[in-house]
View 1 (cartoon, helix red, strand yellow):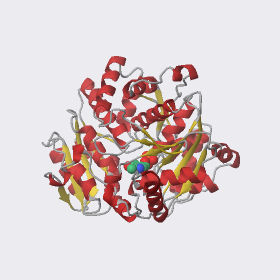
View 2 (view 1 turned 90 degrees about the vertical axis):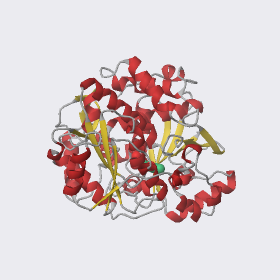
View 3 (view 1 turned 120 degrees about the vertical axis):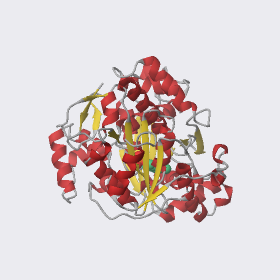
View 4 (view 1 turned 45 degrees about the vertical axis):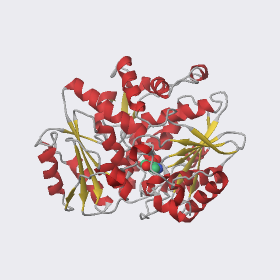
Amino acid sequence: MRYISTRGQAPALNFEDVLLAGLATDGGLYVPENLPRFTQEEIASWAGLPYHELAFRVMRPFVTGSIPDADFKKILEETYGVFSHSAIAPLRQLNGNEWVLELFHGPTLAFKDFALQLLGRLLDYVLEKRGERVVIIGATSGDTGSAAIEGCKHCENVDIFILHPHKRVSEVQRRQMTTIFGENIHNIAIEGNFDDCQEMVKNSFADQSFLKGTRLVAVNSINWARIMAQIVYYFHAALQLGGPARSVSFSVPTGNFGDIFAGYLARNMGLPINQLIVATNRNDILHRFMSGNQYVKETLHATLSPSMDIMVSSNFERLLFDMHGRNGAALAELMNSFKQGGGFSVEQERWTETRKLFDSLAVDDEQTCATIAEVYAQTGEVLDPHTAIGVKAARECRRSLDIPMVILGTAHPVKFPEAVEKAGVGKALELPEHLANLFEREERCTVLANDLKAVQAFVSQHGNRGKPL
Ligand SMILES: *Cc1c(COP(=O)(O)O)cnc(C)c1O
């Protein structure tokens, strides 16, 4: 499988190189040159497979030529073997023909484990083969950091540095990062905000001389392997609800358009999906596009669903690429004008075509809490605020009651106690067994000034399993 850039200028890469690449050299994002397409018979024959075997069938075409089947199978078995629920991604019924796909039974209790557990293992496999090492530097406002650390903690060939804003992530989220020890794991609390952290990561990619030749790898949601891993659970859910003979709809809480883009790909790979609902919080650039054909940056609002607090949606470019007939030059022009501060609309026919599949809703904090309370009253289930946004959007935007509606349950509610308490259902919450003593565990973290040079000096001092690069 070859991968091409959405901006048409960077060289095509194979899977191995795309795994290590991050952004393309022309500023674009990598996408498969040709998407695999499965027949209905083929998809139907996968019913009842264990999750890792389904994962093998769905993802195999993407890694062909880079990872032999037997090795890939072994990696997948290990990856999903660490989940605490034997169904990996169980479906829980909320209402008539309405389901939550629980994606929070991984080590860090959010859906990001599905991709990052795999990414860590794939990186280590490829690096071992090549005899190389890499450094990961990531910024997090919460979920990504802990999932990336958990995913990389056993990697022999990866050193990981996660930057979080000092005193600005929740205690559960901080402890999920700082209580994992390993000579290749480094938590850095920056005396600044999340944007400062992100800016440092960006600047480190732009000038990597402090790494003394070691390669830097991205683990944010633009990494193709993360999207790839997320395609699988759309097939998994549909197969349990009568697919592919019946079509299914999905409502997806999203910020960076990563998770929902995976759903769009599943559909293009042959899975009958009737409707994809983009569920956002008050940071609603995606909703404004879907409802009014306006893609315009606005100021950032802090919400009760912080994992979707974004101004710009980094993976949306991948959909725009398809919307424009995969014309890289057109995309480069569009994205450049966006960067210059202009928002944009797309041509009316392109937008109308997109809207045949996508609907959207923006849900504010008040409605989020009301939905948590409502679902608790109806079912006794406590939803996390992101999932609640998905439920609210599903109920508002649903086109057909006859078609099963699946809401992606992106996090365990215990990670977001503030929203749950505001909704008045906080007492029902307990940490799952493997995290039961989280609040007693020792923490390891280095506090650094909001200073790029200080952070880069720290990385170069500790980037080789705790030793200097
Ligand atoms: C990251 C995250 C999201 C948003 O995911 P996208 O890839 O931006 O769509 C939603 N909910 C939770 C709990 C998350 O951690």
